[in-house]
Length: 316
Image: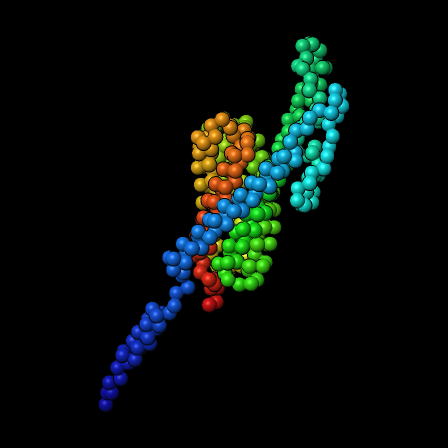
């Protein structure tokens, strides 16, 4: 006798329906729109605060290394030490002596009028002096910009690290986050300054558009700082999606800083040419620091807000 096997289709479909209901009713880790807006605004405000602190430090630093008045005919300039709220020790640790001669050409070369003598030896000597002066100028400018962006990276990193600690709502993140982020962002800022000067000097010999020549060093600098700003969050939030969101936000911020800042600065500060892709007076520097810090704070804050309170790992 042939027996008809029992119908198990109902039993097979039951677990499927049950799992569907469970997956539908499972709580989502994605934060609400209101929460994301609050966190994004928090990062924006903290970014502007950090940029303002960096601009104030940069202004004080410029006062410390302002060109010195001559001490007398034929007398060399003094070479005083720089004192900047203890940051001179960080500058020295990074390989720059915290002295006046590390940041200015004043007194390093004796001014001389061009020779009218056809003596080829004298002409060759003057050309050599000019080459050395240009090399020294590039080195000192690199030192300056490196310190500028170091002084920006430290408070900006601390501010965004504190915002990340507030977002995560843990004591460890509140205490350790600002310190770790400040150190990483400060180091990234120092590197960004060196790369900024190197890039600006390297593209001077190419026949490219003036705006492009100014934008490229800014993209390199802001991109380096932005990666330093997200490093602490990446280290404490594991996952490919988190890395993609944060890196995309950092690079997008660097692109916006370079594309928007240059034309906007030339419109607002029309009497301040961006020589070597750098602003020339304090108000223009303030716009540079605050605009870049605000853009990075906004985009990094939005990416961090989308991580939720706790980022789940793949094993979860």
